[in-house]
Amino acid sequence: MNAKTKDRLLGIILLLISLFFFYFTMQQESPRFEGDPGPKMFPLVGCVITAVCGVLTIVHPEKKEGKTYLTREEFIRAAKLFGLYAAFLLLIWGVGFMITAPVLLFAISYLFSFESRPDDPTGKRILRSAIYAIIVGAALYLLYVTALQTQLPKGALWQLFKK
Image 1 (cartoon, rainbow, N blue to C red):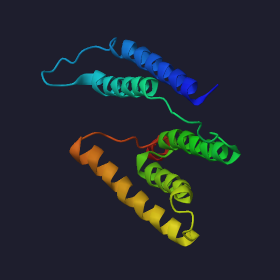
Image 2 (image 1 turned 180 degrees about the horizontal axis):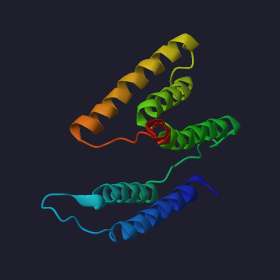
Image 3 (image 1 turned 120 degrees about the vertical axis):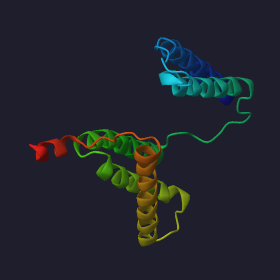
Image 4 (image 1 turned 180 degrees about the vertical axis):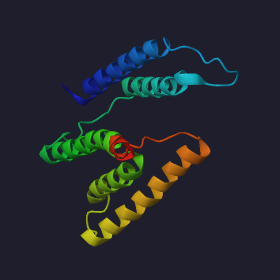
């Protein structure tokens, strides 16, 4: 299968995914408050972005054959990233946002630092990833708790200490 055919197939799949989620998003109840976008807003934005990407992929497919995707090293890196996201779900349930966010932000940033700056020494990568994790973790906390006034998950472990 050549690159154009693969891109057009990918575009069709993206459009189908967009339509699938659009259908289920429209099944959500409308908000009861005036001016409240409700639970439909973010999924609809995601559906529109996915549909636009699908159409653009169909209309302007890759003209030349690209490099092979998911080589062994890329597959291992993708598996590590998937493992980190799975760990995020387990840790946020177990120990909550305050511990999970900085730890996982550090791990993901450190994992990506090998790709973006391969010549940096390990110490510099660790320091840069730690600073990033602390700043972004604090910014997320402030955004959700202060600006949006939401309650972040505390984790099941904290519930054991309360008893």
